[in-house]
Length: 352
Ligand code: DOR
Ligand code: ZN
Ligand code: ZN
Image (cartoon, rainbow, N blue to C red; front, side, top):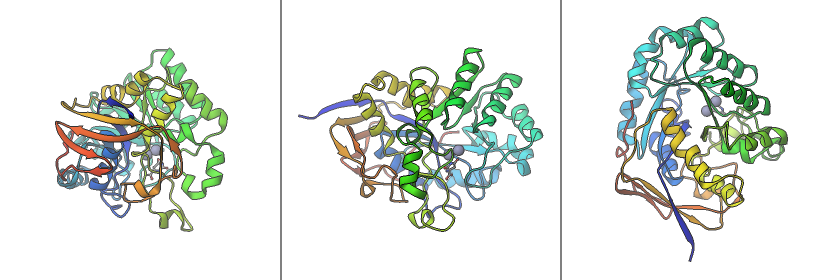
C-alpha cells in the first residue's frame, strides 16, 4: 500500500494571478485551482497587473472579481508606483502587504528613486509587511531601509549566493529581514535555462551551480519560506519574438520539496515551517480550521497535461517526483481529490 502523509494547508506568499489585464494567462479561478492542486490553501497575489494594483479603485475592482471566483483563500499585494505614491495609504485597507519592485521584470511597476522608497517606508502601516523584488545590490538597499526605518522587510525569490549570504549577515546583526526562495531556483540551474530557452527564462534568472548550492546550504537557517513566484504566460507568448519572463509553480512546489525530503536534503518538519508556519507568521495570515492536505508518497511524473493553470505548461514537464497531492480539505470541505478540483467559485475567503 502507498504511504500517505497529512500536512496543514500550505501558504504561497508569491503568486501572479493576472487580474486585471492578463486574464488570458490566468484568472482568479484557474490560479486558485492550481493552488489547491498543489496543496496550497492560502495565496498572496502580486500587483504587477495591467493596470497595476496601485490605487484603491483598481484594488477594489480586483477584490470584487476575486470574491466571485476564488477557490482558496487569497490576499492581494498593493504595488508601489512613483506616479500613484500619494494613493498608497488608501490602498492599505484592501491589501495584505506592499510590494516594491527595485529591479527590471515583467509589468509596469518599478521604483528607482529614493523619495518614493522613503514615502513607502514612512507611510505604509507598520503592521503590514513590505516585500521587495530586489536583486544584486538592491538587496543591500532593502537591508538598509529595514535598518533605517526599523521595520520588517521580506525579500522575494532570493537566488544568488552573495544575496543569501548578505541576508544571513543582516539576520546575524538582528535586522528584521526575512526571505523566500523558489523551487525553480532550487531545482534548476543556468544549464536548464539553456535547455529550456524562453521556457526557462524568469527574473531572477536561474543561477550557477554555486548559487543553487548556497540556497540549499542556507535552507536549514537563513531561508524563511518557499514561495512559488507562479508567473503564468501562454506558450504563444513564450515562443514569440519578445518572450516575457516567468514560469508557473503552484502545482509542482510541494511534490518537488517532498522529493527533497525523501532524498534527505531537508526534514519534513522544516518543509512545514517553510511552506506553512513561517509564511503565515511573517504575513500575519489567519489560521484555517479543519484544513489538511493528504499526499501520497509515490513515484509520479510532472507533465504539462496535468496543469490546472490556464497557461498549460510547466518547466518541470517530464520531471520525476516522489509525491502526489491526493486530497485537500479546506474548512471541512473536500476541495481537491484525485486530480479534480471540487471547490465552488467564490468559496475561498478574501483576506484584507
Ligand atoms: O519572471 C518573473 N515573472 N519575475 C517577476 O518578477 C515577475 C514575473 C511575472 O509577473 O511574470
Ligand atoms: Zn519578482
Ligand atoms: Zn513574482
